Amino acid sequence: MRSERERETLAGSGSGRAAGGFSRSAGAIIWKDLVAELRSKELVSAMLVFAVIVVVVFNFAVELRLELARQTAIGFLWITILFAGMLGLNRSLAREKDRGCLDGLLLAPMSRGMIFVGKMVGNLVFIVAVEIVVVPLFVFLFAVPFLQPGFLLVILLGTVGFAGVGTLLSAMAVHTRARDVMLPIILLPVTIPLVLAAVRASRMVVDGWAALEFWPWAGIMIAYDVIMITISYLTFDFIVEE
Amino acid sequence: MNEREAQVLTVLNWLSLAMMAVAIYLVFLAAPTEVTMGLSQRIFYFHVGSGWVGAAALFVAVVAGLGVLRTGRRSWDRLAQSSIAVGLVFITMIIVTGSIWAKAAWNTWWTWSPRLTSAAVMWLVYVAYFMLRSAVEDPGKRARFAAVYGMVGFVTVLGTFLSIRLLADIHPTVFGAGAADTGGGLASGMHPPFFFSLATFSVLGVTLMWHSVRLARLADEIEELRIRLVLRGR
Amino acid sequence: MDLSYMMAGYLIIWMLAFGFILSMWQKSRRLERDLEAVRSLVEQLDQE
Image (cartoon, rainbow over all chains, first blue to last red; front, side):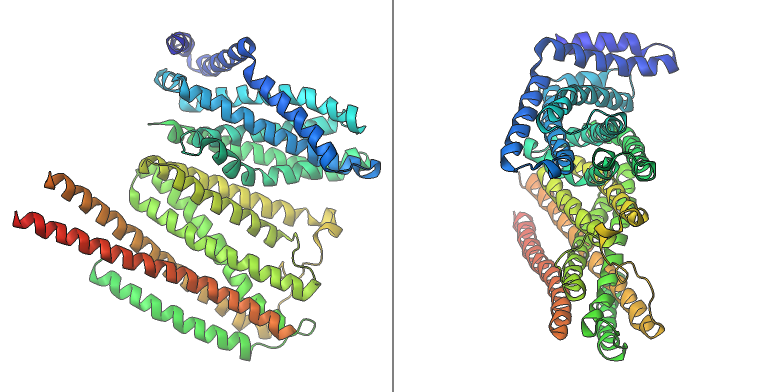
């Protein structure tokens, strides 16, 4: 049975030496999620389809004039990432809970914090996979100069923070009654400072590069990421315990 | 509820009432009229007072949340819940008064100043807090989830406030004239009503929180009694 | 015009504060009723 196999894998890797065992157990979780996804492809495909639909609908919902296109496209991109991301977060943890994998993981000899890291990186990979398609799509449809290192860095920083808080909060949401509705309600307000900073840091897309504008906001994003991921790592145990 | 608590609460009730009366007097009659804004500037005294207490309530909730995670005791959870409830009331106050102030001062119903934006974020997070609480059945889980979410919310609000405040000078046009909002330059004649209003709101906040915690405790005790009775009745 | 803004501001504050107090008072009444119900249950059981 699935959880049996997982437990064996995890027990095998978790019994290694302290330092190595740490990252190996998280790695095992990541690997399991990736392999499962590669086989079924249900998560990323759903997120991708959703993201593309959102982009197309936005295109019709808001008439993008060329001068405004760059400014608003940044916002659209983030909305797309946020909503497609939440779809993935929901399903990722719902799947765990429903199949009893979560219980199997909890029995494994590894710290809950490591489970968090494993889940978070897994979620991160899925969202980035979607972004790899969506960002070029934006360039293609709206002729916005998204493919520059500064902007891509901003996207990455934002996605990391989003995956961090998102994993923690989706673990909460999955235990509630109105599961799918709860995640947007509790996650979106918390991402406001992140999105705020990301949009401000993305100025180079509109005005060209200006280090004085970029680094402060990028710094805030980094601070957000570090603080949120630390809190999530430390408190994941309390969320997931029975 | 024991005797001493009843006494303290009565004192707090009367103190709140009395201080509010004095504060009203100070604000409406004793405070000097502001040069540019006239009468509507007087909103400021209560506006800032309610904002500070709302933010303090959020901080209390973080501490209470830590208490929940550490000890697992229901008393910490009651404190967290009550402080956020009271905090929500005060944040609603600051949003509404801030909006009225914005209309009076700059002829716009809303402005993305640091204080108002943080208040809006705080409001959304707190409302989400209560939605989360109501959706979790197990009381132990509910307390823990709420504790963690309270901390996450605190970081969010703090982050929003600091980032807009610190970096406002980079894009001055976006944030509009917020001199009074950021508390710059208070005339000395305005100090008494301002600080007294602050004190009044603090006392009011504590009073409301105490009552709220007491009610929550009573509800818990009654529920416990009822369960014991039902078991015994069988 | 000025006056109406100020009055509106203070009115809102008091309405919110009173609204909260009112809701707590209602909760207190409800709890008292529950307490009575529990008390009568205790008496019932004692009589048996």
